[in-house]
Each structure stands twice: as structure tokens, then as C-alpha cells.
Length: 283
Image (cartoon, rainbow, N blue to C red; front, side):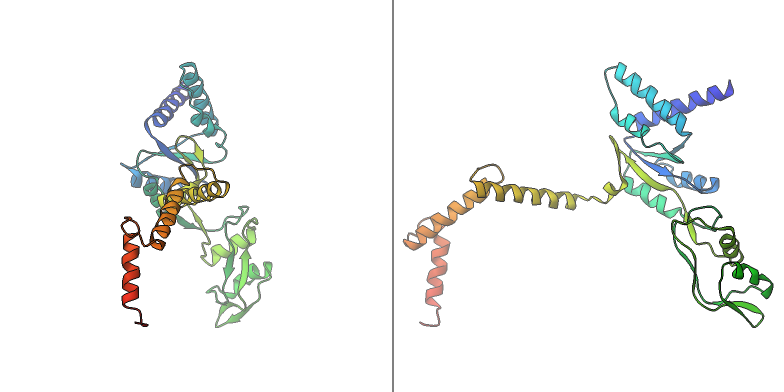
């Protein structure tokens, strides 16, 4: 009975968030500790709300909401789009503010972490040559990984720079133990933005699109349409300004050639020609 009540409360809370907030980050939270999540919640106060839950509960809630909305004649396909991406350790970061502010918080709360055996390495890891600070009794850890060492002044010294972890390859127990011994934390863990929700679900790369980029793309498209329209002789909104300018240039050229400078567009040209003739080196 208690579990059912908690489930109903979660459904009500998630439904309220989806109806209240305009946008959200769908974030991945693997290896993010509870203390780290708590710090992020505190940093988001007044800006956003962090909501996590089991994927099965999230999908069920969304399907129920979509069915109810469709029955009421107000279908919400953007909610159903979330169902398709709810795979893995995901949660929501709801907001009505700017997503840039949330992105700053996400980047701020990234913490270094030790390598864990059995985990796919997110980055390459190298151990530089030089003294390790470990006593000779720890030589077996280096021998297990075929790392060339020598004893110098009572401590183990690595002879050459050595690659211990490779990105995308599972971390072995020997590598993890050695890095812990050397107090090396090669990994960084924090919330990772996997999707952006705002009237639909999008790849986070959309955050890099600025107004200037959109304007440049739009103007590039208008230029292409104008060029094609001029080439095939089909006037439209994109090509008409060019047609008018070309017509004015042609009329101005004829007026200048006929020395008819009373024509408004030709008079400045005539004045320039007179000045050029007066100040010509030949005179």
C-alpha cells in the first residue's frame, strides 16, 4: 500500500513538472554519487528542478498522460517522444529559464574519480616516467602490467611513459589497483546531457546553434534561391530586389551615356565624371 502511494505521488509530480515547465535536460547519471546529486539540487534552487525515477515508471506515466490527453482531444506527441529515449540511468532537469544556465551547473559539478575495474574507460590514461613514491615491495603491481621500473633511492621509478588505460576498453583489476596505489584519479563523473526536451526531444548539439548561425543559414538560402530565380528568369520575393537594382543600373548607364544627368540616379554619377575630368592628370 505504501509503495502504491509513493508511485502515485511520483506520477503526480512528474505530470505536474511536464505541464508546468517548458523545457528540460534529459541527463545521464552513471557513477554520480548521492552527495553530488544533492549539491546539484542546491545549486539549481530557483532555476530548475531535478527529477529521477525508474524508467518503467516514467514510461508508464507518460503513456497514461498521452492517452488522457488524446482522449481529451489535445494529443501531446512531444511527451510520447520521451518514452523512446528513456533507456539507461536517466533523469530530468526541468526549467522555465534558459538552458545555458543549467549547462553551466552541469559542467561545474563534475568530480574526478578513481578508475573502477570492469568499467569502460572514458579516456586514455598515461603514467609519466619518474619516481612513484611507492616502496620496492609494490613492484609486483608494475610487473603485472609489464611496466619497466627501477629502484632509485628506496622508491620505485618508472623508466618510460606508459599507457595504462585505453578509451573504450574495460579497466582491469590490476590497472585499477595500481592507479589507486598511485593516487591517480583519471576519470571525471557528473551529469551528462543526453537530450534536450522542448516541444520534442532533440540532440544536445542544438544548444550550439546561435541566432547568428540561423541568420547566416537563412541568408545563404535566400541567396541560393535568388541566384536560381535569376538564372531561370522566374521573379519572386528573393530575386525582385536584384532585378530592380539591375534595372536601375541599366537605366543609370543609359542616362550617363546620353549625358542626361537630370535623372535622379544618374546625377551623382555625372558629378563624379565631371570631377574626374577636371582633376584628371592629363589636364
